[in-house]
Image (cartoon, rainbow, N blue to C red; front, side):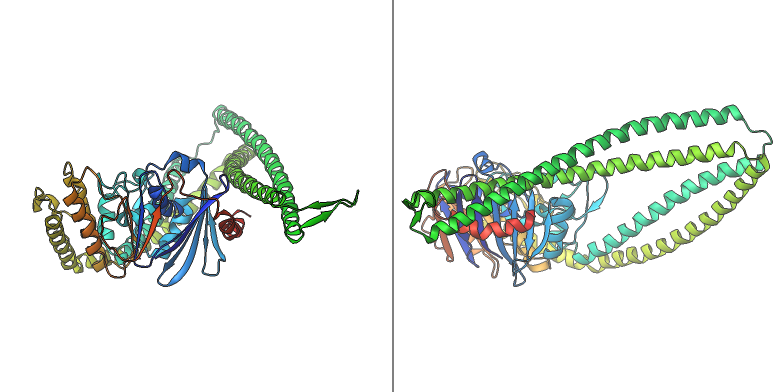
Length: 559
């Protein structure tokens, strides 16, 4: 459940506090009052990127803090540009994250009991980022009223995600299924690695065996020299690349020291400004220690000090974000440098070994190869045993998967029956009469109705899926957020039909947040937030209080 969201722009020195009702929150405002920016910011804070974010909103560099609960436990999530912080109920830092897919996503999936895994474009099985969890719960004003399952950007980063995700969210494929699937995939990766190693060792053994069987008495010195020359040529190229990365790392480390020095300067300046502010707040008049004259400590002077504090704080955040980005770049460059360093070491080791072999007798060389052959045979045998044991373990999990599929066949039929029944009923309620049951029989149905019927057909689909999810799934049921249902020139009767449908079909215990341009005299209960100022969602009046509340958490993330 969403409890509260704080939005703050240090660049504009403006902020906004939004408190969500536990049951229903209606956000009402004319166009350009910031309704959609407000709703999009909820998901942006969780690392899910809605489409078409307002350019002026981007320029404001808004920092957001969302207070939410999962199973009665409170958490805080903060986002400043591409840095995320997750906090417990006592505002103690759980973790700081700079990658949504690799860091934040898995942590939120654990929190939301979101256990599905999908394949990315590199063929890797990963936990889907937060956007895939929130998809059924968010109806965005831009894309969601044109096509279902399209509320967020960058969904194509995963291959063939639609069917498995729909089946997961609706309970056709359960957390238990994906837990078993994860075990099968984990074992398959181990088996694949061992098979690759076995293939390499077998190939090596074949080569060594042919040489030992032949036992050539004469060493081809010229061929041996050519091999060394090739290795030397490779070594020179690697050394050049290694030195490039070394030079790059030195420059980046120097840049990091420079940024840190700037951070220290700004921190000291901020401390001095805060001290001045504290002193000024306690004295109405100040005596000059040099001339003895008494000066009035007016509001203008105190306001000037406060402005300095906000400027320093904003610069400090900017420098810390810059340092975080630089440290990430250093980490990547260090990894590349280490790779070249290891490859250089490997080639140097091979060269040393080759040079030493020139002085060995043929018989010793042959004996060494015989020992290598015996070692490879033994190693291949150990790998065969390990692969066999892993395959048996994998088969157990596969058998459990098959048994689960068989057991859940009846469950799947009940889910599909409920979905089709809801679609049939909701299409009728919303006066969409040109979609036959054969069109929407598949739960992955892609709504293609034209004109003003399309938004109503989509609304029927969204609520059919939500009802099925409520009945059959165990993952966290997120708040339902709907932005601007009045799409595709709905006539007055059709729009009222949609709004009353949303009101009447609200599920018990499920939070609803609805963005509208007008109430249309419909009572939704809960609380109402009215946005009245055009082009200005944030205000300067709330900034100081929200800054004092958000900035300590931001410091914990960035230090």
